[in-house]
Image (tube, rainbow, N blue to C red):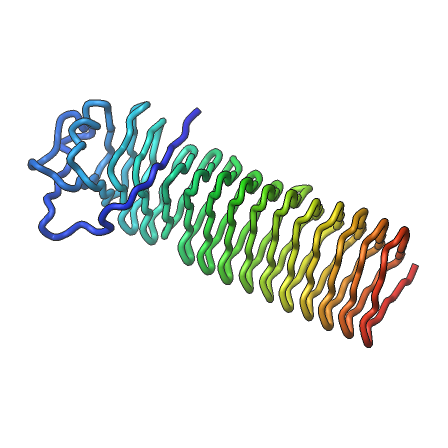
Length: 351
């Protein structure tokens, strides 16, 4: 398996003018570098880092990649240096490697990587990061896509564990070929105007929180969006969240802010979750809203829900706000479920 592990500790962000730079003499770094007592290494051509080269770089604080190149790193080598990919550069990283520091991709640069495991570290993408396989973010690590940055997972999935943090800046674009999965108190954050396309599933477990700011577009093309074990989704105002099927379990929470839209085929609710829907929200459910639980569903003022069929079973409570519209072909309220209709609200059953 090919993957890259990032370990993080803070050092200087910029290279001072009086620091000594060196360059590789050839593609094989065991042939040495130009100059002596280097403090940062500039890579401006294809480069092969071997075990011998790793020893030569022990006194170097930073590696700067300044031109288009392919970098091959031999197996079981630990890169201690902070790595910076300068603007307008295309870099291909190959083979197994361990990078023990911060990794920064500057604006308008593209980095291609086979697979990433980010562990106790931070990766900052100001340009574009393309990953062929899986992305693992764990142990208090961060993957940050800056404003207008691009992140493309071409064949794999993105998995967060153990307080992993996945931040997407304003107007960023993220495409994930497989699934986005969060475990163990992880946090996924999309800032204003960002776009996310997941070609398979979205799954949130163990207090993982997905926060979507205003004017975002989130599309999940796979069969499931699953929220388990106190997971949370917060959809910001004027955002669009579109999926095939939304499953909400346990004590999970979904909140939808003013003027947001939720479009799905089905919503299934189990156990004791909370669905908090603010004012002027539009929800379009092409088939079923089914609640088999003690769920509480709160609708804000002037909100609209259209669904082909609505089942509120067991002990579900649905509170409509003022001037809300609830439209369905079929509506069933059974068990100890409760429907509270707000002032000037409309319930339309056409079946």
